[in-house]
Image (cartoon, rainbow, N blue to C red; front, side, top):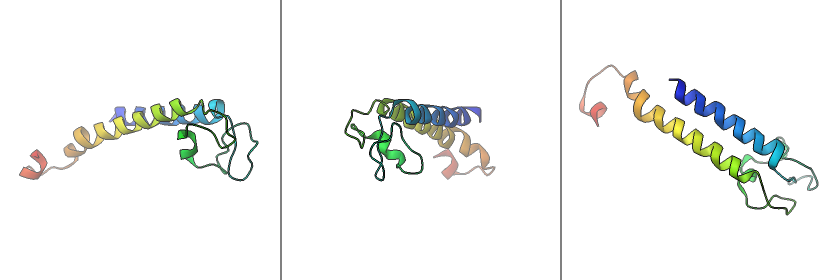
Length: 95
């Protein structure tokens, strides 16, 4: 059960590092900010090749890594831990 939690924590750390330290800036409201403003940007803005202010987005790699870690933790949870929650033995569980 700890691997999905580690994946979630890693997702948060990578995503916020990319938001606060690597995103060059800009939002739909204020285009000259120096970092991703949580209240003015969409989280998917960090996945764009260029930031809203037109500069190359250096935080994109961190965002992609964060989403991959979240996906891996979710995959592990669904395929290995979730079936253990069900007590009945039937063909659907085996499948």
